[in-house]
Length: 116
Image 1 (cartoon, rainbow, N blue to C red):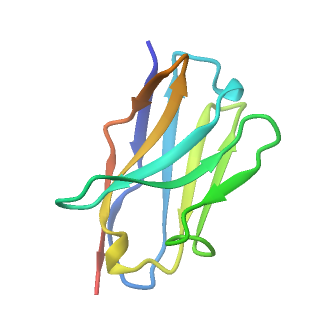
Image 2 (cartoon, rainbow, N blue to C red):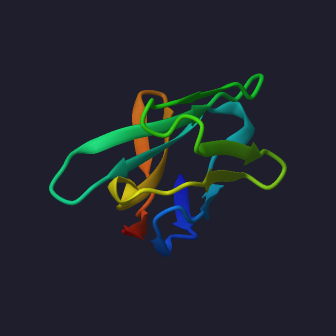
């Protein structure tokens, strides 16, 4: 069974930093692209960043580019999101995500709240 478990969220002041982690299990982590998505209160899911399995290249949403850094540790089956210069508009539940054989799995999410 594929499982994704996020941690590391919390309350932080504007301009602060947090590092999110996602522990993956139930599949060969190194074979798959991994992403972070977020859902702000009253809004739909928003893609944040993706890291590709093969060469580890990355992509970011314009809203987080230059402030967030995605990374992975294939040996530990861990995905990370370093978030710097946080803004109140980054407040959301952050989920890690993977898609295998056409099926998408999201973790339960971790809450990030940025106060102004």
